[in-house]
Image (cartoon, rainbow, N blue to C red; front, top):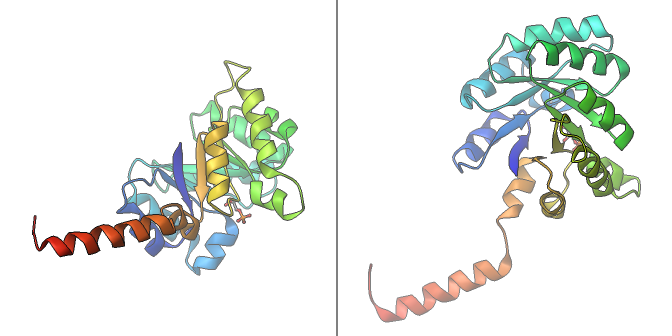
Length: 218
Ligand code: G3P
């Protein structure tokens, strides 16, 4: 499973890049606004920090022509930019256009398996089903992932990668792994939670306490 980090905070990305398990970055208009940075500048900086790794940058136009125009501008920023498009009819049309031109796309704001079928038929590189926002209104977001995985696995020509988004906690990541999702995009704080377990900490402390008694050095 690939790990993308869901942020436009370059300091968070720098810190996680050093772990060696970062496979990409996703941003969205809200994350860009939160960064307080110029959109194209911060996307370019992130792309340069992670050469060869996919960095999703979202268009804000809602009409087909506007999406294509904006997407082309974003694609020019760096070779590893992935154009993020909303899952609307206009977004699906733009996805098809970019897919025909070999430009990578990430179709976002997916909330149903029916939508996901259209996205695969449009040839998207990634689809972003939002699990946390489903959970937030009392539905099981991971059921959507299971449905999409089952449908996509039935068709050889459905190449779109399932990019689990709106991840709220480590259990989402575990469930995504069990379901065979291709990617999880995870907030920086949640990524850091993945490594934590109190018994690991206690076990390490006890090992070191006992080792100290030996008076030895390695
Ligand atoms: O960036 C797409 C998605 O991960 C955002 O999720 O629900 O945390 O805003 P959310």
